[in-house]
Length: 117
Image 1 (cartoon, helix red, strand yellow):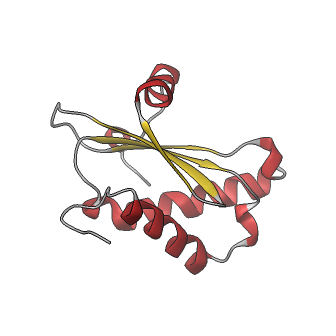
Image 2 (cartoon, helix red, strand yellow):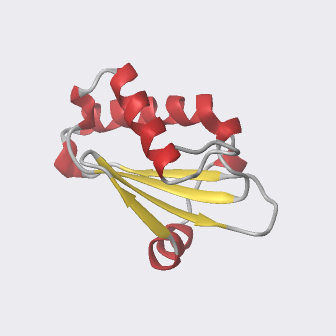
């Protein structure tokens, strides 16, 4: 589980990232991010819409995404707010494929510390 300090859960934070942040799109999801200068920990939020299936599928996707970000949390640049927005049915992906796609997107968006393409 991501700690409370590592989660985005306020609507105004999501709106601020969508308005002021940058976007990186893949065929599977959209990554919105906003780098802050306050020195606080990186925070992560997920948007998995009803279009992606029933509640069981959506919750499975959220659990997998949380596990992926928990595993990669120390590699992500500090003081960054991230939102991952699912675009297709990510529940059909196995965990390893989903992890590769998320890591590839984070690397391409240059959100990992001291790592480049």
